[in-house]
Image (cartoon, rainbow, N blue to C red):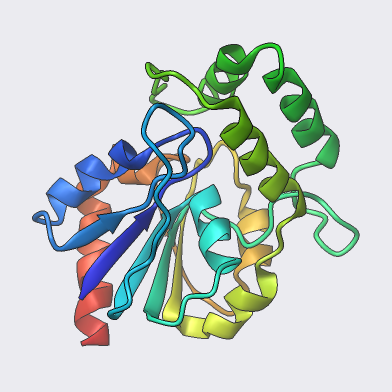
Length: 210
C-alpha cells in the first residue's frame, strides 16, 4: 500500500529520507508544507494509502478529509497542541503567540531556537517562507483533531518518544486515548534518530493490516 508522509513545523520532506531508506524505499508520497525553498505540495492520492505523520504533520492530517486513508501512524504527534480548558497538558498559547510575533522580524532565529530543543540539532539551511511558517503556527494554536483521532480508534498508531522534548507523556495520552500507543526510547525526532526501529514498527503495522 502507498505511504504518505507529512512532516512537522519548520521541517521539509527531506526529514523522512532516513526512514524511507530504512523501509526499503517503498512507493511513497512526500507532502511538503512549503516552509523552506521547496514549493508546497499537499495533494493526497486517490488510491488507498497509509498516512505517516510527524509532530505537527499528525495534527495537519487529523484535520483534513482523508477518504482514501486506511490508517494513521503518528510519530511524536498530537491531536491538539495548544492548551485549553479541556486540554490542560497542551502548550500554553502565549508561547505560540510569542513565536508567531517573533517570526515577523527574526524568522531564522525563531526556527533555529525551536529546533535547538531537539537532539540532534537539525539546522535549517534553506530560505524560509515566513508566511507559511506563520500559517503553521496558527494551525498549532487553533486546530483540534481530537475527535478525528478518536474516530480512527485502534487504526491510529501513536508512537511517543520517552524523552520527547516537546510532547509530554500526558499530552500524548490526552491526544490519543483510543489509539494503539507505543513508547520508544528517544526524543522528538524518532524517524531521524531511530529510523530502523521506526521502520520495523511500520512493517509490523502494515503486515497486521494486510
